[in-house]
Length: 231
Image (tube, rainbow, N blue to C red; front, side):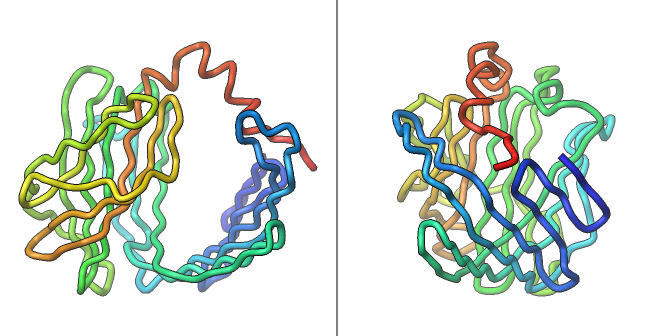
């Protein structure tokens, strides 16, 4: 791994900020289970922010874990060489940073993001390692400025195939999983239909179980699922 003020390289892949956009260069191999061929996965993704948000948020009282939503709304441009695919659409990017591993600070968390007619909204909640709970809804206006909003009702979702507990927020207390993109023993990422602040929205949702992530068996399997070679 190598990093600088404007770039981060992990294995053969790299993320770089070029002043106007985040460029993600992908040089990986297909690591799906029961797939011995391991075909190359190569291409680039550009994330072009509509606006940048300078404010970061602490997820715990000691500020050991910080969440920063840098681009609440963005445009994405995907150009893959292997396989030969390309598309563009709506995007978003954020990051977490901290002074200790995530599994030391949290047991579980649930996160969702939806583009609104004007701006976007992020709902974030979970359980810290000491058993305390946190939950918030943050609305970002068209300029990317965040503002705390009233937290909508909880909407329980069906568990993932790996039996990860999933939940989100919706004004009517109901939401529907349209499809699940990522389903692992400790993490699930899905597309939802929901209702927030008077609008019907399509949201991206994730649920993470850090207790499962810290399980010795999962830790043993991770290098096989996410190899970090040079080629």
